[in-house]
Length: 248
Image (tube, rainbow, N blue to C red; front, top):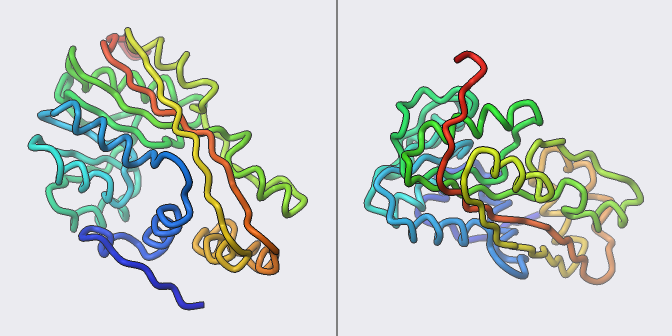
C-alpha cells in the first residue's frame, strides 16, 4: 500500500509510525483536535518555562517551542525517544520517570501531560511531583481519555473486545485526583471521532499500530464508513498544593 502525506517541519524527525498515525488523525478527525487545543492553552499562559511529561519523541514540545518565548523541557522514560527528541528545535530532553523528576522545585510555571499512561499506583506520586516542580502560580494541562469507550465501535465491528491498557487517569477519575493536588480544577470536553470512509483506509491506520496490525486484513472489506468515537477531557489545574511525600 502506498502512503502519501505531507510532513511538517518537525515531523520528519519523528518515527514513521508516529508520522502516519498523526497524519491519519488529522485527515479523518471530526471535531476538536485535543493536541491543538492543548497547545493553544499553553500559549495563552505565556509561560516562562514549560515542562512536558511523557512527551515521547518531542513533536508537541517542539510545537510549544515554536509558539512561546520561554524555555521548553521534555521528559520521557524512554532513552530512545529522548534521543529522537534531541533533533527537535528549541527542546531539551531528559530521561526521567514522572514519579521522580530530577528537577528543582518551583522551576516551571506550566506543565503538560497528554494522555499519561500512569498506572493507578503511580498517579499520586506523579501528581505530587508535578505540584512540586510548579511554582505557586503554575498551571497543569492534562488530557485524558476513556478506557471504556474510546473507539469501542471497532470492538463491535470485529465482534471482540480489544485489549486496552489500564491507566489510572481517565475522564471519570481525573477530576478527583487533580482536586486532591490542586486548589482549582476546570475541564473542557474535546469529544471527537475518526471517520474512515472505507475499510482500506481503516486498515492503513491499524497497520501503523503494532498491537493491532494483525487486525488490518479483517476490516479491508468494510462497506461504507466507520465512525470511531473518543471521549477526551482537557483539565486545567491551578494553585498547586504541596503534598508531603511518604519519604518525608
